[in-house]
Length: 142
Length: 64
Image 1: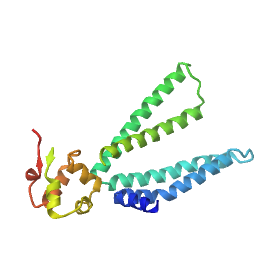
Image 2 (image 1 turned 180 degrees about the horizontal axis):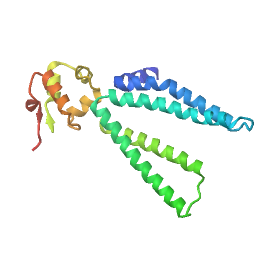
Image 3 (image 1 turned 30 degrees about the horizontal axis):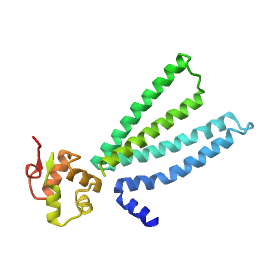
Image 4 (image 1 turned 90 degrees about the vertical axis):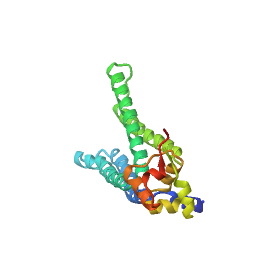
């Protein structure tokens, strides 16, 4: 298992290895801050300013991760960049169509989804579409 | 577009990984180039031609 993981790690490009290494701490911080946010949102005694700070802290960490991703995009080779940009374009298109469909259905009164659910599904749609298209493109270029 | 990259690499006795290191690209890119699934940018085509001491026209052959 360790050998398989080692071979997988060696098969990655240096830029992707750097990106994965750079993503470790933001990922750990993100999980910890989301857990803190979940706990804080159940504490009625917290002030609104503290609640706001705790709620927005994971966004800052995600910006840290995004900066690492932009560095990866700059450092990677041209085929890798093409795969990433294709995946991002597909994810943006699918996300936009999903958001448009949801907003029109909500506006027409056909559905009554809570805003929290819509935001979560939109995020999942973006990340899921990016991951799916990226995976398919990597299979096309083994 | 067809190319002679695999033939030239094998003549040098290099693996795909070794060629990738020399070109500063991933092994995945070398494989995609050799199998004709991906056409290189002009700067990369020049790097490949320089590495194999040839010209772009002798390495990359248009299909038409």
